[in-house]
Image (cartoon, rainbow, N blue to C red; front, top):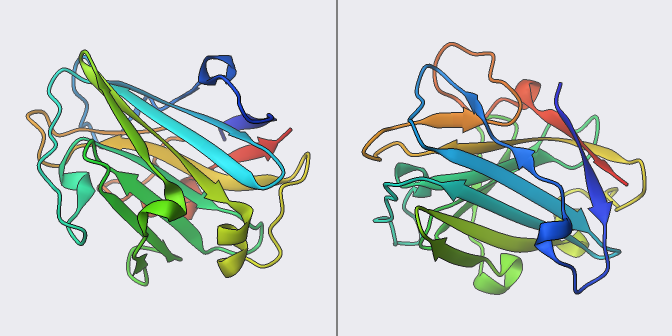
Length: 199
């Protein structure tokens, strides 16, 4: 099982100081040359900060409507189960237009899509030569609306996985941080999550 330690930082911080978590495990034989993806996380007393980035020559960014599926485009995803013993998880999927799919459930079949307003996550998308990135913040208050016992504490852990995908890209592809163990494409598998540990 993959593990990553989430650094505790004070705002303002510099992303270059935060260790990379590499999203580099090809899944279901669907990989594409020249694609690299990574995540970075840190936290303070009230907020979890996430940055996801991808190097890819052919960026697809066509999905713009609020209830469409960002995974059809170039997409970076963060799935996490905040509380040990509770098998519900959040899934957050974002494309290069900043379109968000945010859901909560135990698997893809009972997933409920939440409708995020911009201030909830405040995503910031940046394009650069042959790639893009997005960073956003999740408040403790937002997490405890669904998981009341959650808190940011040193040595506390939560289960999670990170994904890079592009269902309708020039080269459809699927990558994960912690390896996938199923035979057909499905990221909604808490049993394949790795572990994040708060420092």
